[in-house]
Image (cartoon, rainbow, N blue to C red):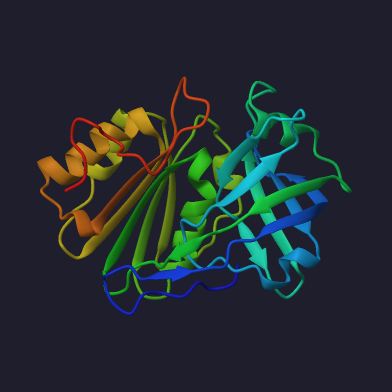
Length: 257
């Protein structure tokens, strides 16, 4: 995976992009793990595509009946500008959701429209250690975090999954990168984080099911007293919610400072 640029300091810089709708064609479909499949897209519309932040997301417009709009946000897994290809990874959980249903049946030659990203927030620079926590929905973003920071920081990553073979996913590696599989839910996450010394020289990023992350954020921000500038906890999805607004506060009872 091509290296991603870093901010010039611990303050995360923002890069804006021109918003454009792109019509792309499926060129490959690859099953990565029991629950994750990778769809490779290509097309002339990717010529000016840019995604340089670890948490970037594109808006995928799935096929829908006339008059309806079905859209979901996804982090680009890998963008290969030299070959004009974009990989998107989907969690497969049956045909109940539009994204999973589409990805389960995706074939070479299918078309898909995407928009964005509107902008990129670069990874911070200057932390000795980066700690990452993600469930399967956030594995692409976790991988991009590794790529962005592994040359300048120690990276400790925890992947939450009930798939014993989740580490078959093509995670980036490095001399100072450790990726560990742990169980799902807030308890497993808190146990994993509790085994680390988290101080002012550590940046923590976590993403996944929103409800399970509320205790994680409270532990990091309220119990440990870590600064808001060094903690990012993002709900990518939520049980019982069809299209979660991941820009909304994770914990309405304790919004960000």
